[in-house]
Length: 122
Image (cartoon, rainbow, N blue to C red; front, side):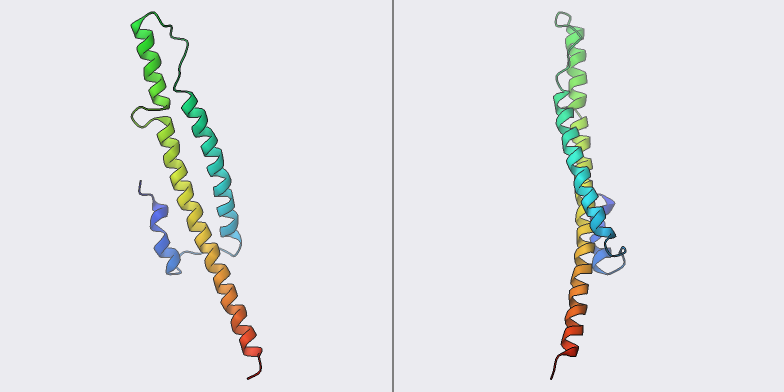
C-alpha cells in the first residue's frame, strides 16, 4: 500500500517538512499508542470470523454465517485487512515523526558541539 506518508521522507530530508521541537516526538508516541489499539481491534475482528445464530440446518443460514464471517476475516478486503492497512499507515506516520525528532536531536547536538569547540583553547 502506498500512502502519502511514505512520500514525506524526502520532504523531511530536504528540510521542507518540520514541526516545532518536541511536537514530532509526541506525535510519534501517540502513533505508537494508536497502533497498539489497532492491533487489539484486529485481534477482536479476527474472532468475529465465527458467526453463530443463523442455525446449522438450513444451507441458507450456513451460507449467510460464512459470508458474514468472511467480512470479518478471510474475505475480499475483510475488516482484518482494512485494520492491517491502517496499522501500516500509522507506522509510516510514526516513522516520519521519529525521523523529524531525530533530525532535531542531531541538529541540537551539532550546535552544542560547535559552541563547545568555539570556546575551547587553541
